[in-house]
Image: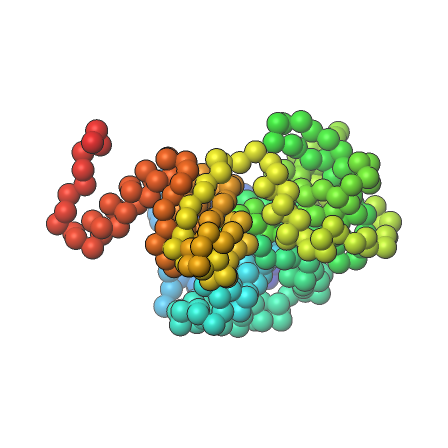
Length: 365
């Protein structure tokens, strides 16, 4: 690497990626001698980066914590992932991103502060992005619909290249091809007119019209794979086969059933095998409970000041316990008994949390 400036940036990026680099391995990555590596390390120190050197046979280098946050070096995929995370965090303080029933008007000051800080950071990040990255980030932000309060964690398991490519295809109304792995493990080829991205229950979904099946479908993005015959991506490197293939063919957007991509994904998820149905009676008017947890359950009047809540947890009973807990009223679980037992367990732990001296009951009781 003859260009000293480029090599210095590469060195900084490597030091930020790993806690510790053995000297010979780091020099090999850069294609320089040990002497040149030492000079490059000294150059970083002059710029204010606290690089620590460890001498000896196993000697190496690591980037220590400094007195101030130094400029970071991130690659394209890291930049997109960072901007998407900041966008979701900023939106959580505006669009009711807290737990069910915790809207923007009721957001805690700390949550609002985090949202504002995320918005400021997002503005700074996108301002200095190259236009090609800014276009991808803006597409993800524009083409994503919020469906639940827990969607932020889902971004961590998605290949940023898949997320950005599908968002661009949605925005540009461009048909795409990709491989897909069903829950059963069956692999298939898909030719899709992409409509919207939806973040639901810690996962990302693509809603689109499947041209081969002539019907609307939702696809989990963590199950998207390269079309058959291409190697699966490892780490999302742009040098490997892209999981999403743009066809270049534009289309006129169709009307999605119900007109709401998030509702379509929720309905599709409820139709899939999931946890056991939970039924509870909540001692509050249906309208009040519906305002808090309506989008996660079915609510019916059961008297002047009580209602019947029915929900099907996507994974386990803890989800139902959380939803009932934020309903804001007393409740009684009708079925199944396992959920009532789970609530008793939670209640006992919460009680012990307010009475530190109380010991937990033996496991066999």
